[in-house]
Amino acid sequence: MAPRRELKFGAFMRPASIHTASWRYPGGLSDANFNFEHHLRFAQTLERGLFDALFMADHLAVLNMPMAALMRSATVTSFDPLTLLPALATVTRHLGLIATASTSYNEPYHIARKFASLDHLSGGRAGWNIVTSANPHEAPNFSREAHLDHADRYRRAREFHAVVTGLWDSWADDAFLRDVERGIFFDPERLHVLDHQGEFFKVRGPLNIARPIQGYPVIVQAGSSDEGKELAAETAEMIFSANITLESAREFYRDVKSRMARYGRDPDSLKVMPGAFIVLANSAGEAQRRKALLDSLVHPDSGISSLSVMLGHDVSHLDLDGPLPEIPESNASKSARDKIIERARLENLSVRQLAQWIGGSYGILEMVGTPSQVADQMQAWLEAEAADGFNIMFSHLPGGMEDVVDTLIPELQRRHLYRRAYVGPTLRDQLGLARPANRFFPASRQAPAVE
Image 1 (tube, rainbow, N blue to C red):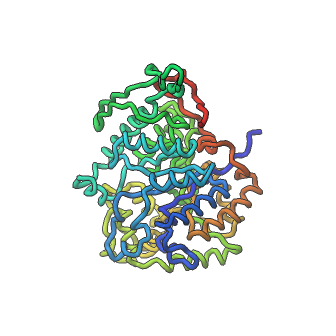
Image 2: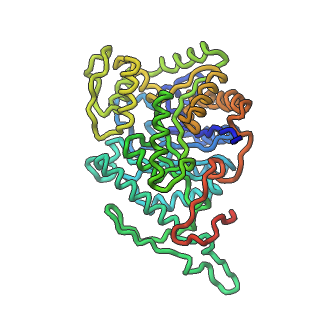
Image 3: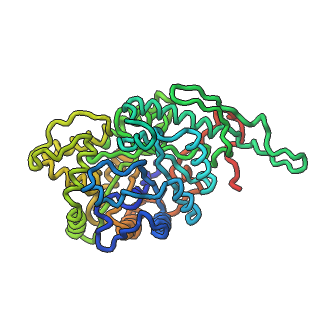
């Protein structure tokens, strides 16, 4: 009999809770975004809960919304992930550390070096969330008038990934001799110069840091458009999906994994992790009351503006109590737009109701109830092959996180659906992912000791 599958858990931090009003919730931490002591506490709580990873979302501009809404958002400012996560690596031992970094507004050499450094500093716990950027306000911050078109952004991302992984393979695992007597630090025959010449990039290399402990940091992707799913099938080892129904999640899971064969990849080498906004209490009624209180703290300006951003069109002039009209495509995120339209049609929601949903938890899957009820729902998604785990979004901090760690996880452990101990030192160990071979030195040692 095959062993029972266990859920994988990531913690989505943006940079604290995703919910617009979480900073206003009773007992919440209004200064969490810029208080390192809070982030230290969060990371250590997640490690106590045996989470696979902390996932740090990021954006390279203030949110794309009117000032009336922007002034109410706690995510208007945040630490840079690749500054914060190395600091958290020093106060954790097993927790994976995943950072978002855009392929549209970075250079491959920078990204390759930073993530290789994080992997070494953390003992092999780094992950890179590849994004192509959807916020149009990012472009003017990088000397551009507008984003590249959607398809061009994904072509650039594919080449960006190839360059970064090529740079990570600059050094064979056994390149560094450190021969004190002969005075030879490394073997020149075990160093590869990439010399990439492509459509978007010309990068000579080599990278000036040893190959990452994991070979490559775990590659993560979050796009759900057709281009996004194709990029994930080719490159990703974890994908954060945004499905809100079991049926659509099963279809997404089947679709993205079925694409992997043409790239010669095993479907088990990609973990599908839907986002899940969790609200827990001792009774279903109390959980619903907590969610209602949280949503009541969302100002209408935030809801309408957030809905406009995710649809890529201004909805403030629409009949707020009428149905959502046909929304044409834009250069914004296609998957976010499609998800909103799907729910609007499925539940016959008005524009105002959609804004309330989007303005709070940004329209993701919600699991609200007792630990047993939420565990039932997670188990159903796992057994239906709609998910390999979940990217958890907490109602508020620290309370919502502590509820998950102290009440939900023990319930899942009782069902043998969640680990009781970490299984190894690296993020790849926790996720059951193989260490990739070096494409230029396939015969070199593939599991270097961590010094």
